Amino acid sequence: MRNAHSLVTPALDEDAMTGLAAALAGALKAPLVVYLQGDLGSGKTTFTRALVQALGFPGRVKSPTYGLLEHYATDQFQVLHLDLYRIEKTEEIDFLGIEDLFDERTVLMIEWPERGAGELPEADLLIQFDHQGARRKLQLQARSAAARSLLAGIRQYIKTFSS
Image 1 (cartoon, rainbow, N blue to C red):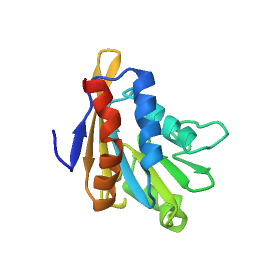
Image 2 (spheres, rainbow, N blue to C red):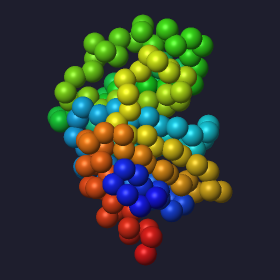
Image 3 (cartoon, rainbow, N blue to C red):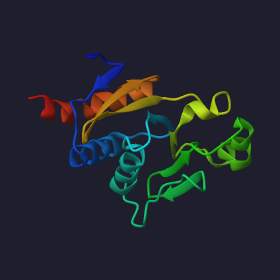
């Protein structure tokens, strides 16, 4: 897809996907809500880890699969990384207090957002991760003006793989 609202990457290896996350981090403006969709092992947590590290978080970035929510603070942003894979009822999301944590510096990264339907803020950016053998193809879809600006900021990075 070639428009201001979406981008599709070629199949990326892990280094290229990490580079894309770093490019995205460099173009970020908060507040922003990002939905991460894809099968188990498709790269959602790897992508988020790379983004958090590119934002300057110095510590360990772990998967929130069991704790549901991880919080990372940098000088410019706070990243809330939510993984809903293990929730059984959408009401469980209320106990996390996301609305109390979310402010103008927040980037909310949500894995398995479909499991929290009706309880989550609307996505600014949707990223779909698809297996392509050992590589991953990503489709990024902007759902707000902020996300369209973000996609414009990383479009050049994607072009380096299309040449």
